[in-house]
Length: 128
Image (cartoon, rainbow, N blue to C red; front, side, top):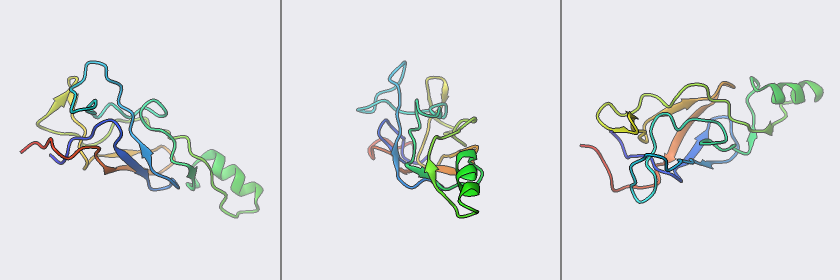
């Protein structure tokens, strides 16, 4: 397992213009100074804030704005659309009865983007 991801971890979407910080609600969680995340911390807005402007042509707002601009790619505000949990998750560590989220996990956006952990938010807790 890579480094455990916690509240405040820096995230980046492949179609987003800016990084974002993971939000982990402290309900029934392990505290590693701040709440530690599991693979279910994948809800748009609640856990995954917007990434500035989105450039994915699969995003309906981007597609509409691009069509209005005669085919010139026109970024629009990012609203993450994540339907599945982070993958793959830890095979050894659980948090809140779900696999722990580590810095190697990826999260797919419905608009084609891949969200990844740029910085896990802490560097002291590792699973051997």
